Image 1 (cartoon, rainbow, N blue to C red):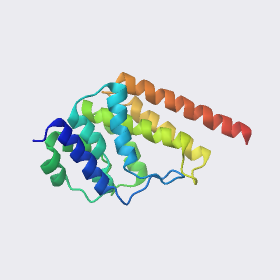
Image 2 (image 1 turned 180 degrees about the vertical axis):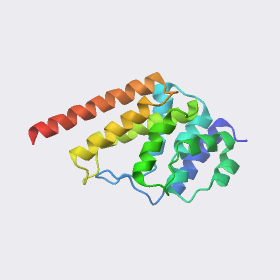
Image 3 (image 1 turned 60 degrees about the vertical axis):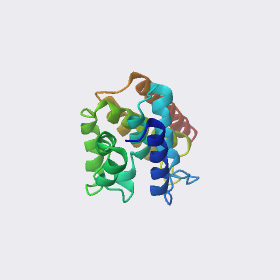
Image 4 (image 1 turned 90 degrees about the horizontal axis):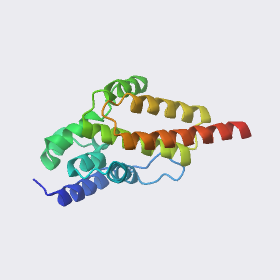
Length: 186
């Protein structure tokens, strides 16, 4: 098994290669890899997590869902625990979007502690993006609905880290405030 530093560097390298041609939905179409690296950084910085497997799972959290990565590949390279956390936060893309979103709310209550760190940090990152650099084609209403849904996922997360939850609530409050100001100007 890899030591902690090698595990994290291998996860960053793997995720960067898998996401190399992907872009975020923000106006600037930022490189996708920025998102999983930021999710891991939020977990380390805010929740003070030093567990390399949780941080690796954060870096890899979208590989099963958004790339050609297989479960077997993750197990072989990163071990069962990392793979299990990634699987816990992976949507089944074969389901309709509405069903996937509802399942995220329901499954949040059953996430392991490590997967809960990843889920909360992912929602923080996404709500920050929706607040500061939303997709150009997202209306104020769509942004509000996304934040409302993300808040339900976070609220239902049984193993939510209090520090990450406070950060999520602060960014959600800021998002609502900005949306309200935008609506009042229009």
